[in-house]
Image (cartoon, rainbow, N blue to C red; front, side, top):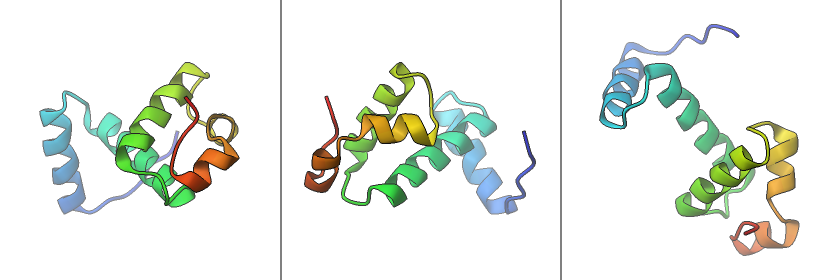
Length: 84
């Protein structure tokens, strides 16, 4: 585990979003990082596709690059879809 420094404004945004979504500040930050990472790796995916992918990744054993790669079908990734 490490320490990540963020701005006061981002910390407040995390606190507000985390409270609204019943997540801790750390859990909210990790959620946003996961969504952002997947959006950068697969820019053709919509937010709803990324949410479905996050569920499949969790079912497959948790969030790491190997699991992410296994959960995204190459042909589906180019079409903006994720593996069912």
